[in-house]
Image (cartoon, rainbow, N blue to C red):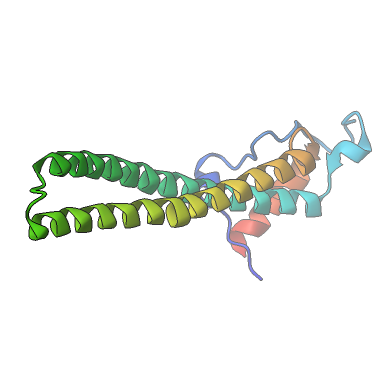
Length: 157
């Protein structure tokens, strides 16, 4: 499976969030176990790319959730206004109001059972990826030569 390097990361100067300091070969990182190998760096780039995608998806879904909530609130005001205008002696008026309430209820159910569920699933996955990235990548030193080699390999693939 080919991994395509994130254009956003490349435009940012290709640095991974929270990564420790880059060191040159022969320098001491303080702990060899805290220095990322090329494979680990490659994995960090992939995690960063996935995290970026999930964060973008989360942002888009959040906009949809907010827009739908505003629409529900507007519709709720309309339902309340319509309630005061219902002619209780007219079956057509009562039926019309009941349809309005039923449609409003369906919209709320869709919001709760679809939009929010999808948003929460994306948020949970993004948080999991962020935690994984923080555990395996953040604060870890790396060799600059390895970073450059991994970076150039990802761009070419």
